[in-house]
Amino acid sequence: MSRVRPLEAADIDQVGALYLETFFKRGKRPSPDLISCLEEFYLCGPTVDPQIPSLVHVNDAGAISGFVGVNVVPMKFSDSRLRAAYGGTLMVRGREQDPMAGARLLKAFLSGPQDISLSETANTTSLEMAKALRGVPFASYSLEWMRILRPAAFACEMALRKSTLRKWALPIARSLDRLHGWSGYAGGRVAKDAVQTTKAERVTQVDPEAFAESVELLTSHYPLRPDWPGLQLRHVVRQAFEKPLYGQPVAALVAASNGSPVGAFLYHLHEGGVARVVQMLALPGREAKVIDCLLVDADRRGAAGLRGRTHPAFLEAMLGRKMLFANVSNTIVFSRDKAVVDSFRRGEAFVNGLAGESWGRHIGGDYK
Image (cartoon, rainbow, N blue to C red; front, side, top):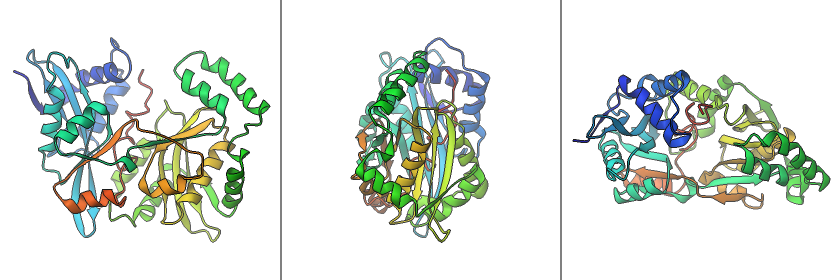
């Protein structure tokens, strides 16, 4: 009879194969690097809590047919300490034979001892299951934003990023951008104003250690936020830097003219590609300046465009900056505490990115 149980070390090979089958290609064996990555993230890393484990679904034949990965983040909510559990990488094989496997995994995850349950990567199917289990989705946390800097190169990247034709087509596309004067972020009236405003800020590229040191200061104004131990935060940031599928990491601190930090950003970029933004941080009222500094920095590095996940604090500042928005995946919250849910509704919770699961090395790792 099928059942749900905690993930064990002996399961990792099967989970790795299911991961490749779900997100990449069927029939490939997981590499040792992928196995090591999944083992660390879901079995022995600093965000693993034995009381709130990742879960596998075992079918009637005794094989693993489903998985939900869990990582646990200690959080502050006003004066309270909470455990937040992120459930993601929900995968099921053979839905036709057992259509309830995903629901069983999700229900088992939600029955754990955590104070808050969340997901930042719920697809349409997971969203419907979550809503049936009284999960609350929040649109302001669930949109992906995009900013096109070089239209021809952007179109080339989006259409051919997985094709061997990209290396031949991209130089032609970039030539078209130059020919038509599509020179990037500095190519419009609003953008020129933004370039001028960024001259008053100091943008300094930093390493993972310095970026991690800035996080607590730049998130301390959120009523609901992670309360990482120092070593755990450094582990999260180091992994967030390691996403070779997305390109080289670029992390920077933004400081006012007097040298005081006002924001930070972390993104990855392949030459001439679309930058993937993992995290933007800003003190209240400085969001627009951080966005402008980010866009100008990526433009100067030749990015075709940028994409990232929205946060309510940055949404208003994005108006007038020629952003595009799409709903690719969803942030969902499960909590019996109305005050916690209301903090999300007001945009007062710091989640997604570093405070989620997308920082993990398994997302953006080159395991194809």
